Every structure is written in structure tokens, then in C-alpha cells.
Length: 352
Image (cartoon, rainbow, N blue to C red; front, side, top):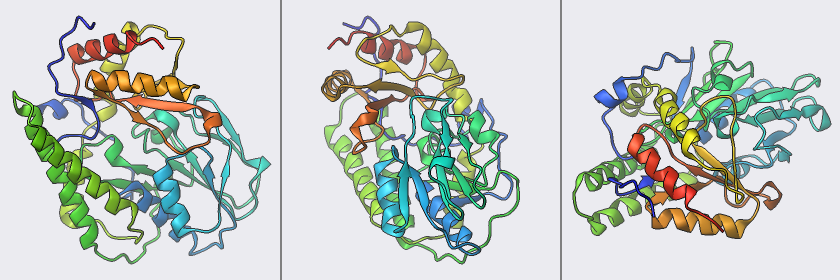
């Protein structure tokens, strides 16, 4: 049994509503505002926008995705583009170098993923006319994100930023993205509003001293509806001015810095466990990422966490099993020293 008492109704899952000007967030200011960036509703919109701007000047040969990647984004992109192929990666190795000379040809586009926010996004490519896009969805404000030398960068911001939706595209050299005419979207403003309502209901649920199961069902249903709509709408659309202003307010906070103290505390408490490997790099990661080679053990561990109100996420389902299974546990601004102690004790209790 854990000796640390949990005062929270749950750890992990999607963010509950928090005012972007709250004192808790205001303690850490984000100074990284990529010059000439463009904001979107999602990261996948950012990727599609970049691809469409590349196509203005280039007949893309092959669009390369990592073989291990978010199943929802991969499916969404494959629904838009028929020239996608994949290349092998090492999600566990921050220093892994992609040897694009083994597969790239002129006029190819390669998407490089910043795994868990600790990848250095190394790539070797001597082929002419190859365009590199880095995806920093799980590495917003990481060193690779801040110091990128890629042709383009994108990020799904809602992974790290507590806004209902959000994505960004930018060119690390500071030049402007080409301009495309985009339509307004009632569908995505609706998805934003639905997610916002779910976040507010979750915040209300967390503030109550009792367990309101009906309210919990409400916000879980709402966020599920929003996710489903997002996966099945493929049009490239403009972020509304109202939603853009809200997202910009949330982007004023350095969420990685707020996470760093929790990560350092966690490292000192966690015990080595033969059932999984803790993925580490030289900086604060997206979350506590644990790598399993046995799916059954991973499932038992996940059940163990959920029984103790810790809700991890599998990043990602439906990928080649040769890569194993990566489970993420959130350690962000929502949690204090007592929470980290509680989560650590629960993790340390697990044995297969």
C-alpha cells in the first residue's frame, strides 16, 4: 500500500480548465514565439498546411513518416495523401540518427518525430531537394524544438498546453510560410467549444468533495465526441480569431519549466523495475515514459495504475509490435510534490 495519501480524484488524461492568467501558470514565462509562425486547430492541420505549401513549388515524390508514429495522425494523413511511406526509427534512443541516404530520393519530404521530447532529431541526408519537417508535438519547448535547423517545424500544442485545441507551424529560419487561402470552420469551432465544455466540467468535478459520477460521464462523453469529429474532418481550415487569441494567451507559459521540478523529484524516488525501462535523455521529457517489451505485463501495469486513479496513455496503439509498448504518465503543472510521491509509490509497488 502507498503511504502517501492522494488528494486528487485522478492523475493524467486530458487537461481540466485553468485560466491562462492564473498565478500558478504565471510563475513560468515562455519567451519562445517562433517568428512568422501560424496557428491551427490541430497539429495535423499544421502538417497538411506545410505539405500544401511545399506542393506549390514541388511535385512531392514520397512523403516519409516514421514507422512508429501516432496512429490517428498517420491515418488522417494517409486519407489526404497517397504517396506516404515509412522508415524505421528508434523511439527509445535520444541520439538515434536517421540515415535518410538509405531511402530518400530527390523531391521527397521526411517527417522527423521528436520522441518524448528528448530526441535530438538527428538526420543524415546527402540527397538533393529533400525537405525536412520536424514534429515537436511531444517536445514543445525542448532543445530540439528551440534550436531546430529543419526546413519546417510543426507541433500539436494541446499535448502540453491546456487549451481546448491547438497546433503550430513555423520555419526555424524565421522566414514566412507561404500563404494559402483557408475557409472558416464551424465544425472545428464546435469541436473547440465541446472540448472547452468538457474541460470546464472536469474542473468542476475535481473541485467537488464528492464523486459525481454523472458529471464524470458527461465530460468523458463530450471529449470523446470531440475526438471522433476531429479524426473524420480532413479540410484545411482557418483558426478563428477568438480561438486564436485564447491559444496565444496559453502560449505565454513555459509548461516544460513547470514540469522540470516534478521530473527531478520523480527520478530520485522511482526504483528500477525489471518489467519496464524508463526512457530518459539529457533534459526534461514530455512525461514519464516507460517502455515495455511484453504487452501482457504492460496491460497489467496499466490496470494497476488505473485502480489507483492514475490514468496513463499508450503512445501509440496499432504500431508494429517490434517496437514494444510505450506508456506515458503525466507529470505536468497539475501535480505537486505530494502527487509525485504518491504516483512514485504506486509505480514502485508493481511487480508482474
